[in-house]
Length: 147
Image 1 (tube, rainbow, N blue to C red):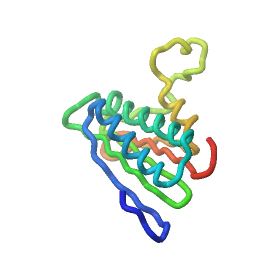
Image 2: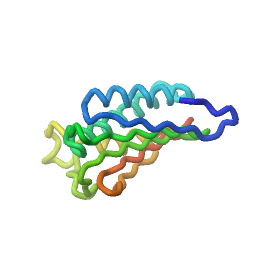
Image 3: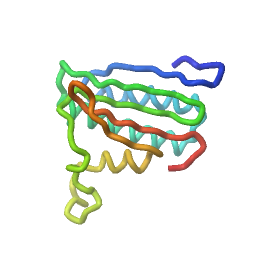
Image 4: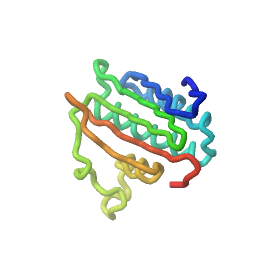
């Protein structure tokens, strides 16, 4: 990722295949950016987990492992924050339809905690539709601020 000597914004966009191998690739790209920006080890761990969860969601639930569909990873470095956008080409979903992973009836479920973890580990979290189809996760972590 190119550095901007003026301390301004730099960004990179990468297209990933809809495979679980893309999860590791995405995490590596984002963690390199986070390290370059000076995020501490705890923050990098949180960022890495949020990225992993978002890309798994895009590959498994959004694109359903389709070879024809891609996951778009955008990494935006600003002087005070790191913004990560993860977009799939699936049918989309309603965030309100996701069960609460902390509800008694869901505590023993093997899945369903990804969005909860993204919200917990990042300073800002949003989900928005992508045209013509798909879902984009917006993950923001501020430098020198704990979640």
